[in-house]
Image (cartoon, rainbow, N blue to C red; front, top):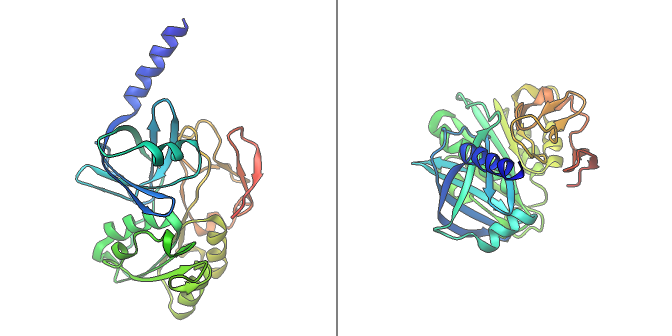
Length: 279
């Protein structure tokens, strides 16, 4: 019986996952690996994510940074067992497995003035959004923040589509301080028709404060521990609304974010227990 269960599990994985061949792997910034994978997927929308599976190691959710010509782009921060293994071992020519895309992404900009606010690798899905929007937005400004100049990603690529402002925590590039300070200055100068945010949750909280009374213009992508990605396991549920980040998000509108008691405060660990959210 146990061998039958193992075979059934393997067959299920084979049906769920698409084979992906690594065509490029490079260190894009300190502790950030850029992977390019040749893989056949349903067309992802900016803001959606995939589950990246390393057999024998584990599976992790990853925001889509690009998908063009059957090549998927991902930016992977070294954090735990699976991402550490990918950093240390995965090279061009290796085979991984991908399932997805999953979740609710960003709505497409429809003209007007657009502001992108990204922190760290949260810049990646915003780049994908800017690239897909192309000239659809009359004016695009991007404020992106990083720990230091050694952690910067995608700034040159973003400049093809947006006026880009950079902030670093240590002042080594651009504005010295958190990126929400840049966002505050920009929002004070201009009235934006749409504001898209992705990055550390406290940054999202700060941008939400800046848009008090205008929450309808904001869309932000949240990150949570996700095991199944299909809304079954409950590891990514947000209180008190019971929303699942993997199915109802990861992108949520400002009016919904305002009602989340968990926002900037709590997350659930792999056992489903609430833990204080740091950073």
